Image: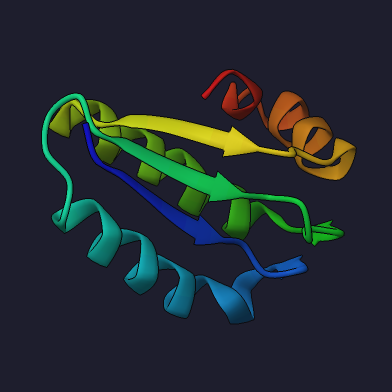
Length: 92
């Protein structure tokens, strides 16, 4: 089993989504079924709907590829935004 890790920026907002998307997709391309993609959320202090949408789409892409997505050190701001929008990211 292979693991890849991607650190999320402190501001998970629309202006950071493109670079983060590229980093996550690059990591996902290196993984196979039953591998793990870990997202280090420890620095996230601000998140908007675009950032949450990216994480949701990444969760869907991981699921379709058979890759396990793990959110590490999920701050309350990220969990709360996910709950409010009904994305279920806190369970990823």
